[in-house]
Image: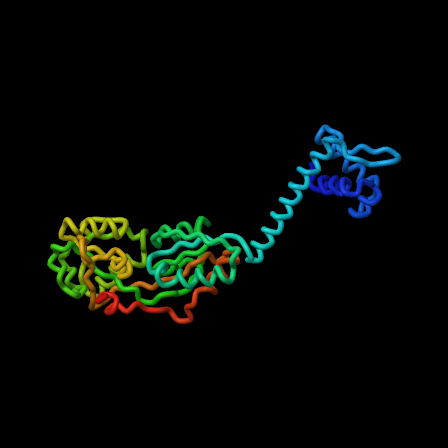
Length: 310
C-alpha cells in the first residue's frame, strides 16, 4: 500500500467520477484505475463499484475511506510539525543547568523563550558539569549551562556569569566555623574532602590552581560526589570541603539547624565562570533562539561580600 494510492482513493470517494478525480490528481483515467486496482489487491477487498452509469463505494470502501482520511490527516500534521521544527517554530529543547544558572540565567531566559517561541517545548535537567557535557556529546542534551568551557572544537560556548566564588565547607565544631573568612594558605595541613575531577573539571582545577598560587599542597582525605554528601561528611569529621557560594546559600549553610558552615576563602578567592555550551554542529535551531533569549551582553558577577553577609 502506498500513500499516493490513499490520496487517489479519497479523491475518487469525493468525486464518485473517475474523469473528474483523474483531472484533480493530474492523472490519466487508466493510471487512476490502475492505482485503485493495486490498492484493492493489497487489501484483498473491493472498495469501489462502478458500471456505465455510476461509481459508488462498497460498504468496505466507506469504512476504509474514514480510516484513510485519518492517515492522510496524520501525515499532513507530521509534515507540518517537521517543517515547523526545521524552521525553529516548534520542537523540543533539552537544557542542562547548575544552581547559578537556575538563579541567574533561567528565570528571565525561559520567560522570553515562552513569549517568543511558545510552541517550543523546553525540558530542564539539573546536573553537574561533567554529566552535562557527556549528555551534550551523546545528544540527550542540546544545551549545557556549566562551569568552565571545554577545550575541544566539538563545542562552542558563551560566558554568562563571571567569577562565581567558591567557599570552604566545615562542620560547626571545626575551628574555622566562627571565622568570617580564611586565607587559602591555611588549607595547608587540613584534610579535605573533594569530588572526582570528571564531576566538575573547572571547579576542581580552580581549587588546585588557588593551592598552587598559595604554594601549598592539598591533602585529599576523602571523596564525595555532591555538595550534600560533602556537608554530611564535614559535619562528623574535621574535614574541609568546597562548594560554590550559590550552592552554600541554597543549602542554608550556617543557618539554624544546619550542621555545616560556609567560610569565605581569600588570598586568593577561587572562582568559576558560568558558560552556555552547545555542539559545534548543532542542528536544532531552538538552541540559537534560546541563546538569543539570554540577556548577557556582558557577563554578570556575584558580589561575594554581599552574598556572604546575606
